[in-house]
Image (cartoon, rainbow, N blue to C red):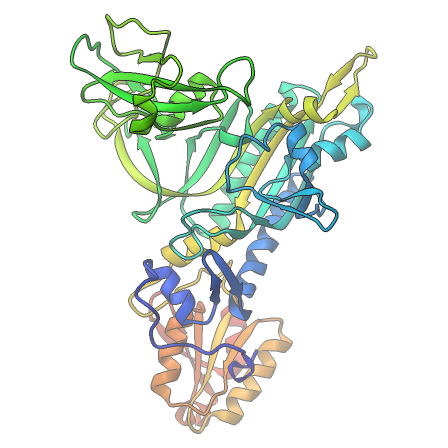
Length: 502
């Protein structure tokens, strides 16, 4: 591709409102452009990075035996009512009515559709196990999109779904995905760690998250350097002493408690030791609540319903209707496994895996007949990687003070060819040879000065820069520079292709 053909050219600077360095470089380099809050266009260079990431993902999913499909972005609301997620998810779920007045959903995941497909296609145990996947656009109406592509409303995901006869089969597919995800991030060049996660709105019995550690991350992770325990703060456990006095009370309103899950709401008084912090995710999970929010003063004054007293399991001598682990782990707390001090770090979640079990299959009628002619529900797993978020994290990880430094596996082009004064003919000849050899090249053929071309090459961040000028052309040579290290070698024009392949 010739730079003069690109729709969007580079920019010297962008608004300081874009708070992360990686995102500023994506904007300045013409990789992406914002359209509205949390909604972006991916221009040619950004699309090339996404294509390289998607190719890598498809190779690993096919290696697992996955079957690529494509499911609709828009779903009938009836499916989400059947799965009971219609009322469980707040305004993040995109809802609208079609011209006939039917309620519809803009999908943020596809468990309902997969369960419906399984109900239509699977009858016998002989048809299991199965694994389907897609790479598709999704919508989550996030109230606080931030950090460029880290937290958006419209995004692209790889999501896959396993269908098994029993928990044993699910265990195998879950572990296979865990291993495949480790390979994916290693190949892409992004360092991640896996941590225990909350199942959240997905439901199920177990979840792990793959985290890129960075100060700009919104998730707090608790890590133990001694035994390797790692968990998201939402579910992190820790050793507790016994507190008998000076307790702290949190007043919350919880919805979905009681026999009628959709009609009940109740004042909850949570009791913790004075130094403790409430973990709202733990409290919500303990209560089985659909949602939880701080109680307003007027609700407290009105004496809204009878309060439900919930005490942390570290508090003694307090009468409570329910007890459990509802305290948030903090830096310095003792590891639940070995007792060593925990360390708190920040991270961005780039992938997650869930053991869904039979939550969706039972509600949407996805079952099979076993060897003894007994009807059984299909056991499901759900797995996802944020494709556009992965691009963002790579930009955060691979940049310096001059611009982006893409790893070879995901770089939009293998090399950036610069034609300087007096080298136009030799550069054009080299461009043709590189293309014929199957190497992808971004060719800076602009009538611009050397300073601007070198500046933009550093900003755009291809792994290799090839410079052809009058002096190098006279010697039939090319200056080959590695972007990561700035090391330059002079090669004969005929040797460049083999050098880059190596």
